[in-house]
Amino acid sequence: MAKRKEEPPKPAAAWMSTFSDLMNLLLCFFVLLFSMSTIDAAKFEQLAASFSDSFSIFTAGSTSIGEGLLVGNGVMQLNELDEFMNTMGKESEEVEEEEDPLAELKKEQTKESEELAELIEEIVKEQNLQNEIDVDFTSQYVSLTLNGGILFDSGKAVLKPECSAVLNKIGIILEKYAKSTIEIEGHTDNVPIHTSQFSDNDELSDARALAVFRYIIEHTNLNPANLKHAGRGEYVPVADNATAEGRTKNRRVEIKIYHTLSTYE
Image (cartoon, rainbow, N blue to C red; front, side, top):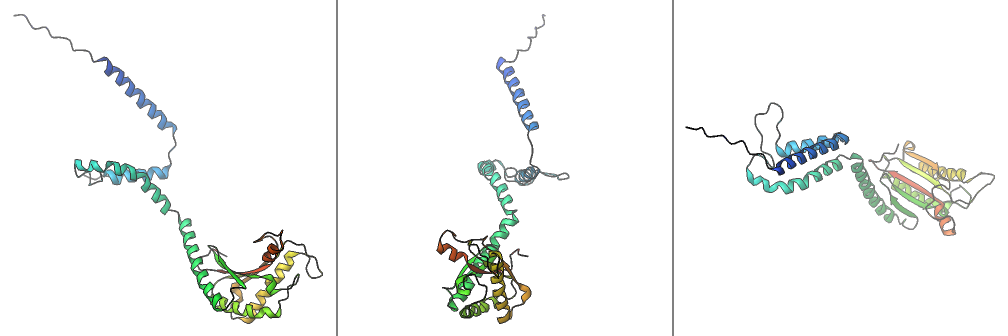
């Protein structure tokens, strides 16, 4: 009986060879891209941790895959795939925002200043000083600004006798914050000055700040160690020196009250 001749195996379809070559080329392409890229170590660790938590990838020594977001409870978890892919990046961004302590500190400082400014404004109203004092604040301090014309004659650093009522009321305000650092700054306009007493605006602003400092020390129970004074001359204007009104605003004394969260030294 004649044996049945075995037929040779049929060759693979032509498209399969083409497809295989294409896959190999794509693999080589992505390997090259990966090799030329740089990896942010911190972000890579966050991504790895995210995958570990989400897919329940177990560490060395574990015996089984845990209950993850997409693996562990069956096919129904595939319904959550879209939500998972859309939220992974956002979670990483939220982590980065939470890890910015400087931004959080700045926010807390500004809130502290705002609350302090509100309290001081109430005291200013109680003392009927709304027309003499402007209250403002930054993230570091609350400032009380007095127009220089209330305190001094033009080109002088001797306090006017009539300003004592205003300064006494300011002293009452400052005593409520006796433990805070308080700085007194003198400011001038940019009109040059040269007299027998002051050679320039720097000396004039220094002398005016010192005059207010001495009055506060003599008429309050504040600790001098918590008070500072400085002349800023014409260098920190708050208005345009090109107009008379602007120059009037620039001739001023600022009293800054630093709060407990400020970084002032």
